[in-house]
Image (cartoon, rainbow, N blue to C red):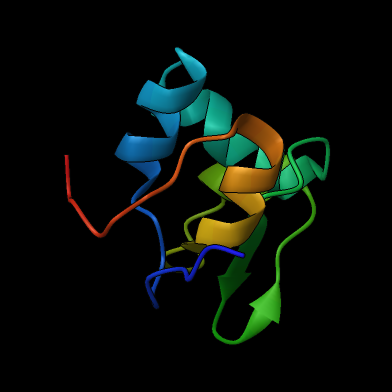
Amino acid sequence: MEEFVSGSVPVSVAAKVFGKDAAWVRSGIIEGWLPIGAATRRGKLVTDIKAIGDRKGRINFYISPKKLYEETGYYWKGERK
């Protein structure tokens, strides 16, 4: 079994892996059809896409290296780009 780097995969890296833009990745995580991580705001899970533009604070995205690997076969080694 592979050992995965701790921390979150950057959204930009996940977008390159999927061949999509970062907004596609963010939307998929929030709506739940891209099961590679979670979106939170002030410690609460964000599950409504309308929350992106509501100006109530920054949405943070956590992308699991293990889940990204399971979905795509891409093994993230901690690189930022």
